[in-house]
Length: 131
Length: 131
Image (cartoon, rainbow over all chains, first blue to last red):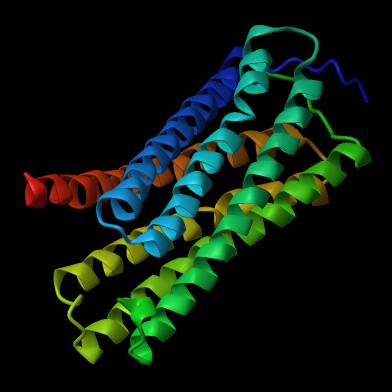
């Protein structure tokens, strides 16, 4: 099977659309990460709530990491559209990068799930964790 | 019109990996969303001091997240078709990536809402209190 398949101009618009949406999603996550890091600073330094600030700091770092991971496929998506003769190779790199993005995101969601469960138990048993 | 193209077994193995992690990601999003809705409902019924609009905010985020998780079901099906069928993989690939873009745009909306809540409610609220 030839691996120098070239996507048509119409198919390239699909890759351009994916590039745009991924770029926006990554930037939105980085913005969320920065806003969360500011909250962490306020909690830890201004409000003297070091533990809560630490938890929020981790959350902010995770959001920023999500933004960075979701930017990984962008270069290769651009190359699919702009270059000729290497579309399938570039596509397979995009596939691997997307796999990593989903893998990291799934891990972060698992961490959120555990954190949310801990907070929920905090409410149920009226501990300080839920406050 | 582009010619038919069939991915190699090695390529299909990479799509299978992507499919697996996308499935975990979608399940994670759905689980976190359901937990958000459930825990907000528990808190509202338990009549804790953070109920009311705070709880409704989590329900809204939970519902948006649930839609986000469910939007990944169609690209999952198209990815499975790339691996399972032996005809022309390109239409399945294009359909899958178009659905990826749609789902990711939904993710951008949810993340933007999160940014607004974090920056507006968290940082803005703190600035107003300490002005």
